[in-house]
Image 1 (tube, rainbow, N blue to C red):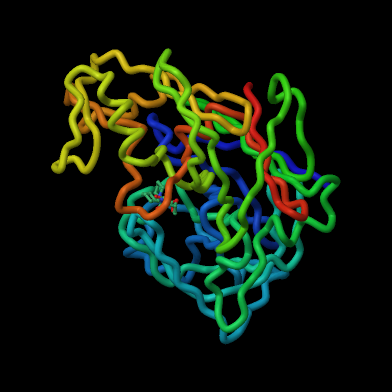
Image 2 (cartoon, rainbow, N blue to C red; image 1 turned 90 degrees about the vertical axis):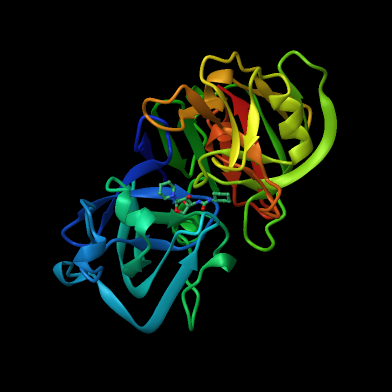
Length: 330
Ligand SMILES: O=C(NC1CCCCC1)N[C@H]1[C@H](O)[C@@H](N2CCCCC2)[C@@H]2OC[C@H]1O2
């Protein structure tokens, strides 16, 4: 089996990407955020208080002839940005891009935090981390990828996220039309459940490459790139007027600044993030001050290779034993 679906930016600064999925019989279509940084598949539902629903599509299990309540099971999740949700669990037929999983655990929200209510074009998440992170209790549930794996032509899924454009997620195959050159793979440490791997180093603009093992997680559900303070200060030292603002919670600079590119290494390969990806957004619609797409990871306890980095490459998440992650230019 295999599947292929669009990854559509939900706003003009690519804060997140959503993918159409169908749930149940007859199929109910929702737009979900495929998130390699978590492992719960949860949706806005008919059980979500209407005060917390603002424009989202909802899943109504009672309208599906193939839905089954997973009785006595609950879930509750808190994300790194402080957002969260909790609820009950059904199983139902679930498809992404033509790839079907029967009896997928679909976690129905009984409560969502305000940042989810405010994102009206995001109807929930599909966790694509390792199933060890799943929060359903008393028995944890498998991700869509883990359920689909036995039937996939190849035990992989790929992410081709794009800057200010629609990209794609593929399951079960590697589309050679989506990248150039070779895919460079590197080892993944799957405990405690993230796609954890190392960068082999970095460079700022035309500067020399600094070889250094930088461990972190490739996380499609995180918007920005979070790296050690030493790297981030070296980057913004090249930006006229840049400062690390307590007020805005990160590096800001004049929107008119010329930013350098940022290059990261995967083993011997090099991937360059264009300056435009790092000139992330104005701090408010009329401001001439901009917020950076590269920020410090100090305080997070982990480096996060989020969408700003991932959209500079074609990324292969390989569920082989042992798991590995691959990057190619595109
Ligand atoms: O919390 C993180 N990442 C942290 C960011 C700060 C530094 C630590 C990691 N990712 C979440 C993301 O923010 C959520 N958000 C929803 C609204 C649209 C934008 C995306 C979405 O839900 C879970 C996941 O994706």
